[in-house]
Each structure stands twice: as structure tokens, then as C-alpha cells.
Length: 425
Ligand code: AMP
Ligand code: GLY
Image (cartoon, rainbow, N blue to C red):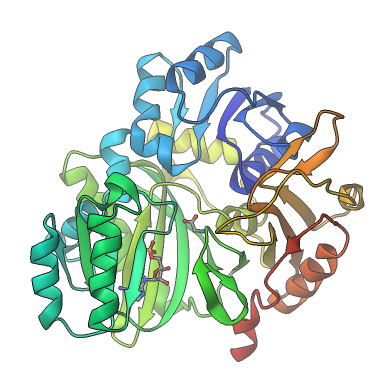
């Protein structure tokens, strides 16, 4: 098989690494890719993930057998529809189904209609009505821009003053662009967060092992929200009891709800869950692998990823036994100091060769590229996802942090408490 992966971050590197392990894959292409993916795939950096026609033409030219669309923007924008109409076999939800991530108002209405547990909410198209509502709401309250906002369109407001400022930021100043034309105001929930990713074929859902992200930029969950500063898998807080509840009330009901709405979902559904004192509730849905959740989940998957993807496309997922190793993985993101606000890039990354031939250690590239001399340099906020597997979460964490020392670049920044919560178990 020849496969094309769309995207160019750490998640796509992890997907490419899984594909590379498949005995069925002869050649991997990636657009735009990055310097790490380029070690195992042929990348085309001149084609962006939102250039739908160019991607279709490239896939045809390379005669690929499968296209795997990984990031949220092209999924929500309808790349899968474009590729399928061009006759290309494509993995990922079509535009109608990807709205589960593309519109928070849609996903909240879906959960309400089908009795899927989630926080209470109201939706507003008009800032004055939102402000009037907030005057009587109890604090803290959560404001969410309806559309995609790089995972940053969520504001937790502790006071009415913060809430007023939040409405201004989202709906009036359009901090997140058109994503803020509509806004969801949500009840604040307390609890432990867990992510569960799943493969879906339209009818059947098979969940993967659990994971937990660390979204804030600084130690102790301080600082701004980021795309994710590190992950661990599995989550010790995701117990059998929680799993049973979610299977009955959340996972299959979500897949059935999408089908009932005429939006049959084929691809990955990512369930962002809050384990509240009143039981698990859905924080959000994503229509794709998380980044850096994919890095800790895929390296533990025993199945050939191509078999699972084929089953999703063909509607035969019920025949697949999804299996994960009985171990743990931790991913620590090495970022450019200053991320997610402003940072310098173009610094040489050294020590990458230390990962060669080391079992259970992975250096997934996110923001890396080549300079004019062909050296690998930093090119983004999140640069590398240093990942290690171990028999236990503690061992995986120690190995991942040890490996963060193997690589160097100017302004290298990381959190030091990824997976610290596991000590509380
Ligand atoms: P989302 O993109 O909807 O997952 O929101 C980003 C982050 O904001 C989540 O991972 C939570 O940490 C936090 N968050 C979102 N909604 C709520 C809520 N209703 N209550 C408490 N925290 C929330
Ligand atoms: N790490 C969270 C996300 O990919 O949305």
C-alpha cells in the first residue's frame, strides 16, 4: 500500500510511525510533514493541509491507496468529501460528521437531544443576550467560542467581570475570528479529566486505551492553554466502573445519535471527559486523534493500524479486536520558550541520533524543519514530543524525562510535572 497522511505535527509523526510498522505499507507520503516525518516518509512541505485541490492532485499523482486526514481544520472544512469525490479512498469523517468538533453548539445540542451526560449550557448569537444571561448566572462559568480556535477558545471565568470581558473577547473583539460568532455558556464542572479515543465505522465503536493531556503551559497547571504540553496513558483514574458507565451512556449513544441525525461518523472520535462527583460527563468531542494523545496511545496499540482504518472505512469494525499493550507511555513536549504566545525559531536541534535503535523511546517531531544547510531546526511552538514506554506509568515517566536530556536547542522549554497526578493514586 501507498499511504498519504495529511498534517505536519507530532500526531502525524506518531501516525506515520504506526503506518511504518505495518507490513502492508510500502511507502508513506505526507503533506506538509516535518523534519521528523521526513525520516520515514516522503514529505511535500509546499502543500498545506488546507489546500484541498493540491492534496487531491498530489494523491492522484502518487497513486496512493489511502489518505489519512489527521488535523481538525481540514476535516471540519470538508477535505474528506473533496478527496472521496475525486475517487480517493480516505479515512476521516466527512464534513457533515466533523461538525461534532467544528461546532460546540451542535455538539451540545446533540448531547441534550440524546441524553448524553454533559454540562448544562445556553447558546448565544447575540452578545447583549449573553451579557444579560451572565448577570444572573452563578460563577465560575465557562465561555466557549462555537468554532475551531486551536483549542484556545475556552475561557473559565471566576467573576462576572471576567465573564463580561470574555464575551467582549469572543463575540465583539473576535479574538478567535468567526469561531466567536456564536458562543456557548456552560456550567463549570469539577473533577479529573480523561481523554478516550475511539475508532468508529458509522455504527460500531471500539475505544482505545485512555490518556490524559496537560493543556496549560506551566507547571502546576498554571499559564495559558496550549495545544497540549504532555500526556500519559493509561489514566489510572479511568476505572472499570467509569468505562462501563461511558459505554452505556456516552460512546455508543454518540455514534447512534450521529447516525440518527444523518451524519454517520467514520473515523476517530475523541471523547474529552470530566469525571465529576455525579459521574462522567462529556467536556468536548474531537473528530480526530488528539495531539499529543496519539503519541502515547498509538505506540501501545498492538493492531496493524491499516487493518483498523480499513475496517472503519468498510464498516467491518465489529470484526476487529482492538488490543493494547499492558504497559504505559508518557510524552513530554519540548517547546520553544514563550509558546503559546510568541517565540523564536530556526535553532538547530542536536542529539536526535540518540533515539536511533532505542526500543521504547520515541522522538516525535512537531515543529521542526530543515534550514538551507539541511540541518534540522525548530520551526514551531511545540517542537518535539519525547515519548517513552515503561512497565508502569512511573517507569515510563522517568524514561521520558531522562530522554528529554538527550536533545538540545536554544530556548528549549518543558513542563516538569507531566504525569505527576499518577503519584496520587
Ligand atoms: P474544551 O476545548 O471544550 O475541552 O475545553 C478546554 C479545557 O477547558 C478542558 O480541557 C477543561 O480543562 C476546561 N473546560 C472546558 N469546559 C469546562 C467545564 N464545563 N467545566 C470545567 N472546565 C472546563
Ligand atoms: N491535546 C488536545 C487536542 O488535541 O485537542
